[in-house]
Image (cartoon, rainbow, N blue to C red; front, side):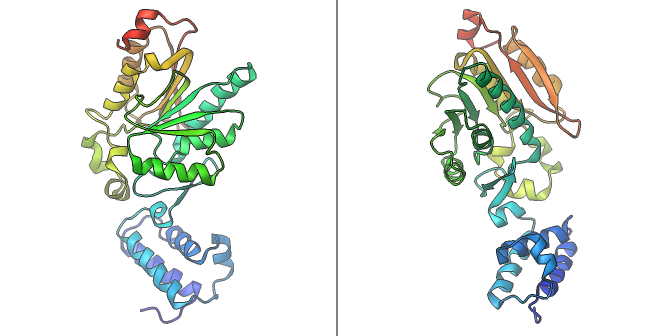
Length: 303
């Protein structure tokens, strides 16, 4: 029972509760959630340790701490996650954006800017957009891009993504389309981006409990060995690609060999490059089509 409703007291009580529950970052979690409840930032929390809380604020804070102690992710508790320096609304309907996925946006920006500097406006598509983080971050950081398609099979995810596009001022340049993989696209594209589910269900038990128990399984687990959706995307992609198009896909740390081999079967005339993230793990595959695409290969869409 909280008897002294000061920042110092409730914060340290919460830290002890989270530590006892086995949370790995109790001090950080307790401070972030308190800043959220009070509508401030962590610096203010540290500077005002004797400031009082109302009974309502303390009760709300204790509710969030109890949920965090059970493993619910901080991003779902606060409804927000930063990605590429931008605030994104998230909910249990979408995967929480990861810092490693910023590499995909950075590489996409390189490709987009190269084309823009050559005087062409590339058509871009983000497949399985979720919260819209990839498409929206790309639109915000490169305002010269006139249109980015963003597809997802989930209406709930697209609703979250649309809110993010509105909040970040790019509603007029990101077009959300509901459907499976590439099917909703109305035209071929120059840049095809995707962070599709790639974790095998056999690996579920190695995931952190807050990921396994709270994030949407449809956004985490891919069929077969985890690469099922990515293989389907690559097989179906040729009719949706312009000459010289680039595909950028995120994949798992142990999937390079299988994915690279399949990509070379699907795109025998393409240049294929694997890109490591800042931790040194293989993270992205980049498939660059030649400027002249063999007609039969393009129509078949299969190895």
